[in-house]
Length: 432
Image (cartoon, rainbow, N blue to C red):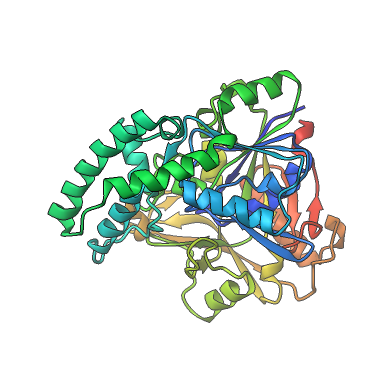
């Protein structure tokens, strides 16, 4: 049986939550490998919407192991609120186990303060951060001054690291941003409470995953955001602070590369992005508004309006190359219903008139690119009841087939609605 990685092929918000929820039914372990509570995965079960920020989307299934890996940055307050919310709604199955890696880094109040303070000073050059402290937490991780979950469990180590960090951050907050200083004792007291509450969930998750693999269990590695928000390979600097591509599933959970046999790339039937940065196929008028409303394109974490545009296959093809994607899961095809003419971007024309089929690394060059489109006929029929490709309208099938041809990658799933059952399943990635 295969172990599977799920990644987004665009700028996030591709519908990974629904796909992970579907695949989790066939998996034994669902492991999140990067990001933090800047992500929001939306799952709809029997008409009830659940938004998950830190906990893997497989949590809604019984008899599963759900893991928050070492590559995730964890805000303990958010995690505890999420656990309590699921328990209060009766949506935390009794036989499903949740674990947090002892090596995951902890988001502290000073991370959030710095995140917001920096963004507020970037007049005209904002990155579009969520203000959740994700970037500063990863900075401390790389600077080797971060506080990990295992440090939080140790009163002496936690006090020592916290005191040093707060002194440093207060100097920066007061001197650079003229902000009020943080109270180290108040933070210590608050986080010691969190430590006691999350202690039952803390484990060496790398060992846990290895043990499950030895038993022949199926592992589903869940990513957050999208490939073009990757800190190395995305549209830098308009990116997140972690690696979002499939290779990081291994580093972010402590497993070797041979653990992965299949990579599913989630591709929305159109393109969206939240925050700043170039967007070649963006629709800024009435049609963009229509897609936003039909697709409910508002951030699950921030509520911000998502920028909407035509499907950009330059982005998708680059994601396929970066992550070694073996199958495409197409989402939100239903949102395009009722649009007379549809467009798919197949390449870019640069500012100097040259044609390219790759995303430029230089953001000035990227911002000057113009899309090269193919135009296709739309469809008006409701497709939400389709469960086989043959049940889709002819023009919807043509749109999907063109996407598959341009991707040069097998299509394995088509989502025709928000619900679990509103899906055309073409292939089980665990059967590789």
